[in-house]
Image 1 (cartoon, rainbow, N blue to C red):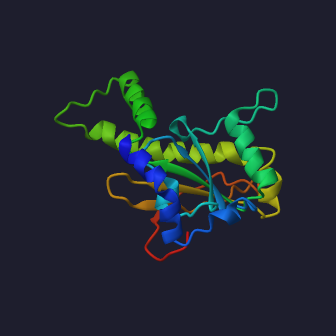
Image 2 (cartoon, rainbow, N blue to C red; image 1 turned 45 degrees about the vertical axis):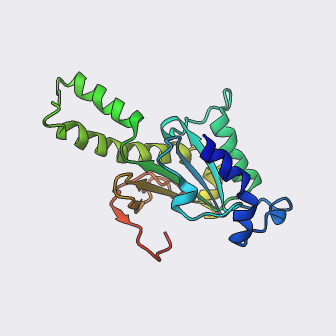
Length: 206
């Protein structure tokens, strides 16, 4: 804890060393993008994207879950999305998935138990493979939920908002982005026909 206290104490000096003009942040709040990710401490979207203060509007939830929109029972997450889309006018939203997610792994384990598949300590491959596949499926499910938010739909239609799905590998540090193919039934929906991924490479803009 002392390390965190010390870093907070010297933040103004670190900001000055990196030419961060903190005074300007009090006059303007226009982030480049919004990120929605898991609360896992090993995944730090701002660090992964080298975002500076004011660049990235972050929403972190349990398991990176984006709840289905319910007008009668709004959630903190749905209110945050609406604020980003309607008030901050973000042009891009990144849904961040990641490997080794405890929430996804637990779901994969429950699925295996229900199917009477019990990986041993000597051969954890069945669980590992299923958890990895479930992790990819999970991030795409959250993207689909987001695409159905009433505040998101019209901005997808007029192309003033773009949705992105990324998957970060904790053990390698690599981040992949999905190539999203719009469904034929809805020109503004990112629901996939196929979702191949490709690695985000050094110097490349996603």
